[in-house]
Length: 261
Length: 69
Image (cartoon, rainbow over all chains, first blue to last red; front, side, top):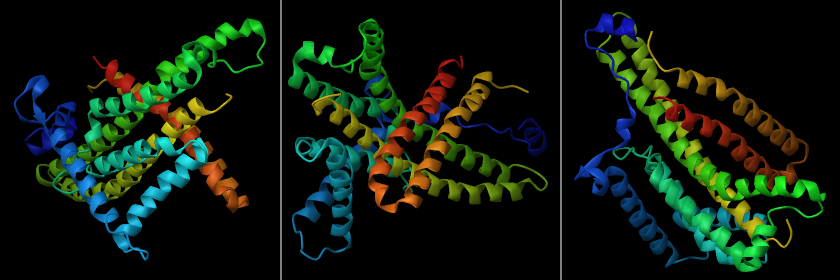
């Protein structure tokens, strides 16, 4: 980029992490940020769409009803029933479906024109969802076995005695530290990295197109074509992350409600 | 040339998860191609494995920003 700056007059400035902090009203810890507005809009949109479609269900579904039924079927049959088990999945279904729709629509806001901000590229949102999942599956687990049984059940039965303390430490770290950490970071990291990549493509393409000299504007146009390809790729990643988040929630809950580990 | 070696480190760290995810989906595609009716069972296993492997790459990204300063 140093040579480009010499050729084009203005110097190229790469987008920074500051692009993700966009307060609209106020500043500091109590600012109203763009991500908060997007999340509120998404919550209203999901509620209105789901309520309006499910309040007048037809035997022969139209397009919208087919889409909602397909989403619900994916979460209910494809994830919850298959992983948690046919007897025990029902109490968790509202949580799982809410998680899936909230994450999916919030992620898709990252490629929606005029909004283009994935809410979960701010880590706080991912941490809140992870905290809900974390307390749910540990709460269910403790309610089933009691605190002592919960601590005992980390180690699978049938191990030789000397290895049990080591295994307990490892498993404790997995269940209590690694799982919530990776669950939150996975969603945040994917959304953050994906949005950042799109920012770099558009900023760099704009620079090459309008401020660079010689044949470089051609590469800028190519960069914009590639940005469109990347948008398509982002949609796949965003759907996949919503799916994976709910999948892992199901796996964790299944481990908590299963009779043996 | 200026920059930060932490991001070079992240590039190297992403090789491992990249190979791992490739292996997982190669096995998944193989399994579905040989036995299409096992798709629903394999899908869960494949995506759980994918999520676990991907966690390494995401941890690398976070550590790259953490050790940047």
